[in-house]
Amino acid sequence: MTGDFSMNADLHCHSTVSDGWLEPEAVVRRAAANGVELLALTDHDELGGLDEAARVAGELGLRFVNGVEISVSFAGETIHIVGLGFDHRHPALIEGLKQVRSGRDARARRISEALEKAGIRDALGGARQFARNPDLVSRAHFARFLVASGVMPDVKTVFEHYLVRGKPGFVEHEWASLEEAVGWIREAGGIAVIAHPARYRLSTAALEELFDRFVAAGGEAVEVVSGAHSEDEMRRFASIARRRNLLASRASDFHGESESPVDLGRCNPLPSDLTPVWSRLG
Image (cartoon, rainbow, N blue to C red):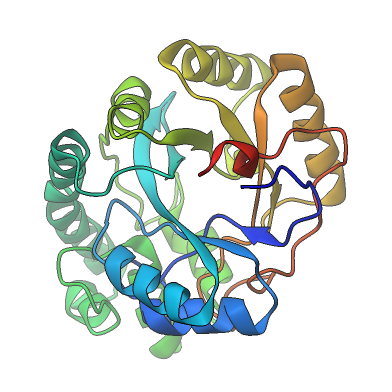
């Protein structure tokens, strides 16, 4: 795989297997139509869409690598670690993700109970109407239900008023550890990437600790370019990638046309002096 920094690579997006709006096949077809040259489907804690996505990508002549986005607990925040280029049939990864998903149903019930206290009835039933995968009801599905119910105008506003720390629908949850997530990806032959680092509400010291532990565990890359990153944030994490000798990833984090600020393949190019993560993907 070429190391060309200008390649139109999109290495983080979602389908209906987790909290995206499009089926895996539709994600791949949209990416191809947008000129994406290298794609990874990275559903939350799930591998179920990879075979279909790889099949369609092959039919379209689009280069495809396996991906996943693993939920991690760190310093009171939920951190996301993307895995790229792994064997999606590796037992350690499959079992690890199964453990992570096993806690999602309990969390969904607790979110629903918290929203009930805030006057929103049967939020879990409503959220399930938006979840194509019954094993993965996420905060995004609750947010979509609240938008459809007229409680808030859009998903972003729902999160700000109900689903983040300190708000009525937020509940604590313990996900995988950072070391576990990176370990599962590495055991399966993949590369671990810190996803959209600007999104985490971490102090400078905590962010440095996150990168320290990530690198010590064998993590190798960071999303410098993300649909969630401003120009200043892109420059900040480009600097961190240089200082820590990390590979750089590029990603839209596309969920759907109505919810994502950046479409598949439409985010900024990587700075030319960084080593793209796809230089290590076969």
